[in-house]
Image: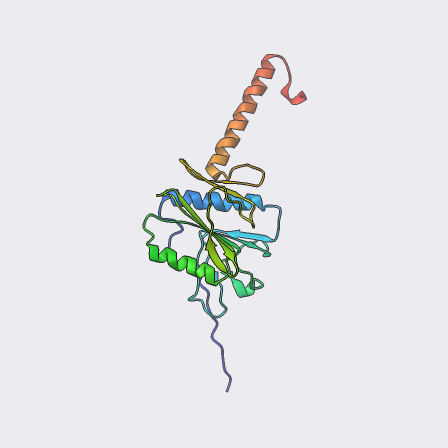
Length: 212
């Protein structure tokens, strides 16, 4: 008698929206794209937003979809989900969550318990409604609260956290702030317009801007 093993399915969606507000969405994108830019030249850093992570082989009911996760030691590339046992059993080292206005505390408690159990090294939770940042770092096997968090520099990412009146700011090791795609477009438009004004001024002086 031939025994067949049923294939285990790891769904690529949990049916939940990526964000519950424009504020939450913009912050998720800003952090994800900022991390992408930081490690754009390293082919072995995989970064994803709202991607289901399955830490246990054969247990698709055990999963979490961090708002952003950073995984060192895994190649960049497209994935429908992050199935850990197919990724050299490497867990995400850094996780970010942006708290939604309707997230109950029990949900947040379950998340930190999950990240603690399955090997996350650094976990950062920002609540935009209360402008509050909390961080945890793995010490002697457990995630412990980072205190103080203001001015904290991530050991893994090298980024610095500041919380001011305008909200959360994250700074790269070179001192440049993380910017959203919208802010980046605005900066590029400003630089383009400034270059065009300078070129027009040079032409008024009978100077060819292309010769400079």
